[in-house]
Image (cartoon, rainbow, N blue to C red):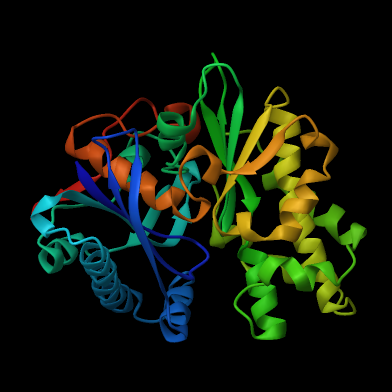
Length: 365
């Protein structure tokens, strides 16, 4: 019952890979590894998030390159734990999202991954393309991880929230009796990372130290929060198409101190999460953080100060048995298992699909 899960998020920072065992518990994490994207790969992927010349050719080459990088992560996991490829039931690989358009009139989502090549390189059955079946059924194809959250983090007596702060921040509600729900709150680390890299040369603001040195520009924050996405009712999902750095620039006068903008962007992430909880899940009593943003100590401190969250204990998913960095990769190992067993993987209440569907395309070893 060994599975490998691979996730590359909208932060475009690298590859998370996990080795899990589903035979001894709901999800037992055996090992994990991370491979960072080099700058050229990051820039090539970022360029594909927008229209450009010769897109099909560039996308195909990058899908092949990613398959090689994913295979490298698989090899690293197997060697670290002395496990043969034949012992792995399947790889679940999300791929790298380069376009996500959930609007009903033009609904599609593109994740770069050559699943056939990954299966060939690893000699392991590979499951990819998890979003398409949900989209074909009228859903948005995202977020997909709430079904996994339900399987591993639900509590019979406590209303819990799981908040993943990756490039985009998304929330999962796990009530005691009612239906599981969830949606993308808005930008997580994406805008902060882009602004930080542009002004400091660093890929991200470690522990929020740069944001901590600035002051929130409240007029700017209020203007950003008026953006229509934040008031849209769920189901809803978003991505770099909506919240790239180009979205921010028209709101700026050019006279703002860079660290003050960073402080404001951090507060935008915090406030959009708090508003989502206040609006949709005021009865929640426990809140668990995962994703890279869970390590931003200043962001977490600001979340703890929000009156909308005062009734919630805020901790990392580590205390529930899965470290914050690896939750999403574990989710795609789990979704691969669901696909291999022909078991439903989506939650229509989350994605808006017409019904429950088995997700994923399988490339046999």
